[in-house]
Image 1 (cartoon, rainbow, N blue to C red):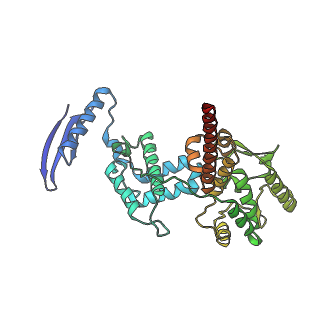
Image 2: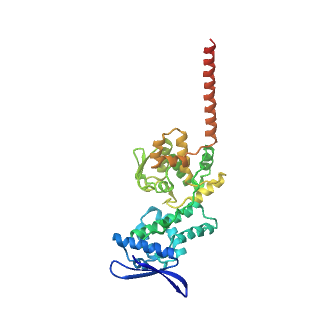
Image 3: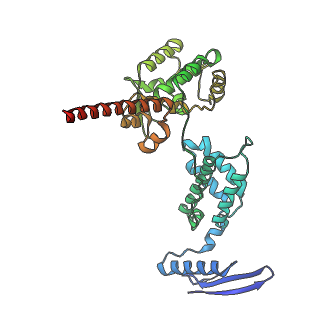
Length: 364
């Protein structure tokens, strides 16, 4: 067991731990408080006794910039890297700096970083949502976990305190009604005719935007759409109904077999974002607060209303956990409530009739 001594210098009072490492070297290190020094000395003494000791000076050379380079090399192949993770890494590097020593990033600074994200605006000048902040913290936490696994840190600083994530509002309350579907498709004409086909496919399959836009003809066979590059990396099959079959026949008639991709615009695959086109069509159709992903919500809600079994819906839409997904996507609208009241009224009428019949029997 080493010792702790108080040292008073020009920079104030510090507490210095002093001990002998397993390889015979004398180690001394200063801390701001006696409590910190005592905790660190106790931890190092324990690792010496258990044979798991590592020289703390080993971690004083690794920087955030070095971690970022290693992290990018490892996870660049991920589907989410190009779409979001590379932007999150850039934000993290700008805040902490590439020269920042990993060992100097403590839990308290992670909390301050969260506060910084909450108090500053995004690139559009709007406050960041809880979900955006959580995605950034999740990325940073995974980076720190990777640093620990690569032996660049002795401990992940996220593990030194409580949960930093904020509570999110994941309740999805938006999908297209039958009238809105009709109005939206009616506006997909002229330069937006390509959007009509994409929307019809999305509503009839519940496929995600990336799955729809990258759809190829060789994925369509035997009355099924075969998806391999999915969000959960689990292949799945989506059945083709009559409306979708008619759509594919119409597209083939227009474009022939000249292209590998199903959805083409001006001779090129529609692999870019269709946000601007969708926003234009929604504006003309007088539909507010709607995103492309809400077409998936619409498809799943229609499936539920049509009476499709819950387990079958899980397979078609590619969900591994039905409980959470049902809560988020199976949206209850006004018509559902009216139907429920009607069913309750019918049930009560039947109960009243049964009571009347039993009463008559008793009187007899």
